[in-house]
Image 1 (cartoon, chains in turn cyan, purple):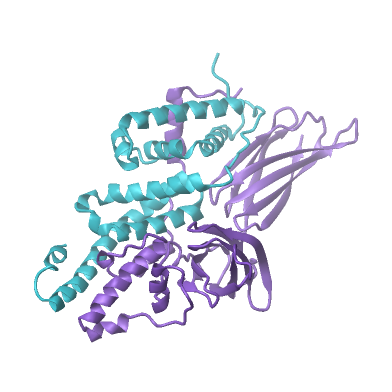
Image 2 (tube, chains in turn purple, cyan; image 1 turned 90 degrees about the vertical axis):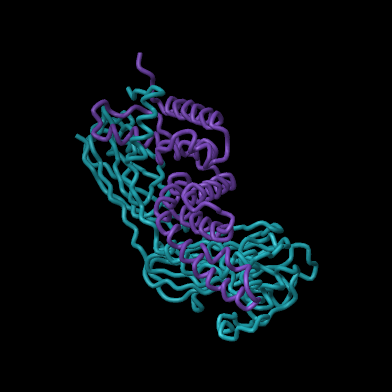
Length: 189
Length: 320
């Protein structure tokens, strides 16, 4: 990154040559920082969007957006959080833009008590319930339970106060339990 | 009785749920995007704010202009080829289109598996209609075309191989300054070069002058559909569970036809829907609807994948 600050000195020709060298350095640095984030970002986007094609598109868009704004990132140690924030914002926008809200029937009749797929049934029910969360709730749920991030980190990534993160997690939990209840999952007596 | 988890248990279930989801590797198309970054975005003092692809192009063009002015001929080899253009409705569009610089939009380099997509330029057609478009084709032979324009457009999209038309989509309307996408696909059996023919007209143009663009893409192999299914615990009193793993994302309907009731001689059916995710095992639970019948039942799934293609699979299981 030293080249980036040296560009302003010297003749115009040297400036341009430096700029080219700086571009190569910038490209190399950006590639190194981004390449290790692609797989985590793709997984995160997939959990948020529940669609691999859209996740691929989201990360693709995030890379281009990050590249465009790379010079605004003054501290490279913050690259991961910065890039994650871009991915999350794009995913959230994609969720909001979905014209058709995916509606998953949750099933309405009890499975057999010794169903060999009982664990799978709960997974299935939770997966479908997650699909009914709002974009805002889904983002914080995925960051909390997929990325295992503490509330403060989620707040920084999403750009909202920690209290709002806690509230959204609480509301999401309430929504998920209600969805499970609607699907016939009952509280213990 | 299905016991609903408490709030605390729900958190554990959520951890468990996400821990059980498969870790995906970044597809090759994402790795490839790092090799296709536009030049020197720091030099891009472009004021153009729309569309995103155009902003990147503007950045690259400013850099190229600087290079040209200070006379570094060795860098001229990097200059893009000149392409014929028409009138451009915006300054930004003119800048990009007049040089014909390939605009790396969000999906311009999408490709995965055995399929590929072409880089996608921003173009102005002979009638002066300007579009910024990008396309992709995935390994499952489905793809997406995204189009935006400063103006409101009415478009049609035809997916064809030259000799054969695979899909025709009309009513693809593009509001001004809004990117709209449409999904498309080619048949499993198709390999080779196909094209999207995008035809657009200004929505408010009484002359209905149209421009067309042919956007080729290459498919070298498809991904076969498969559904691995299993029926367990099948007897009338308790119901059944239907376990499955699908090779592609798909919206499915499961129809089970039970043997004819021994009293009424009427065969009962049970239908339920489920969302299959690529490679993720799932379970559909439904009871057998009170039938005292015994014998062989039939299950039949009809799944529609992301490109609108229908897949069907069937099998039998015994009711004791």
